[in-house]
Image (cartoon, rainbow, N blue to C red):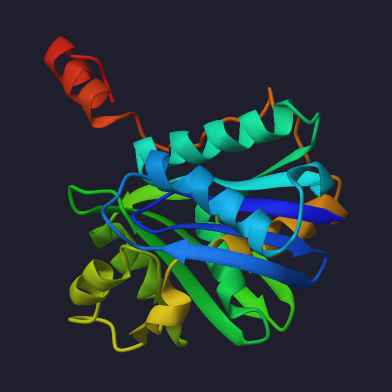
Length: 235
């Protein structure tokens, strides 16, 4: 099965064409240019440089969140559009889980953290053993102090990945000696890892129709939270 994977959930953006366990091609950029300008040109260039027609793609996968509200919307909307016109199945991948797939082949505990602002992070924990990724908790938004309390109970090396890894390391390393920053080339989410996570879901029959594919935010947008606060609505 040929699969097109997309990621626009944070500052970096990437696209990948994969077939089962083979990465055919991948483009990645990490600039301040909006994903709405860069995503589809990357898809077109990827198809052109791999001599692959979009009509040959059999499934679309996307990091559906958590992450940047705007970035997640762009990626999911693009995936829905590409899949709908071709009646393709979709795979919604957790952004946090996709980063654990950066460490396939290793034996480690991965703590995926994305900056959620206000001293909070989007987080999930994963144990990677060879070619297996085991989820240890649901995706959640929590305070760094709460994450610190939880990680303090673990007596093993913990790798921090994600765009919140540096701020988390600065906060956690003052009290925890077992947390480490992942190397930069393994720290951020990539479309190749989205593809690997998606193939795992496809094997389990976990696909969606384009209409059913939706963003996963974990929190309300800031504007809505501020409005709720003014109106006295419980967050």
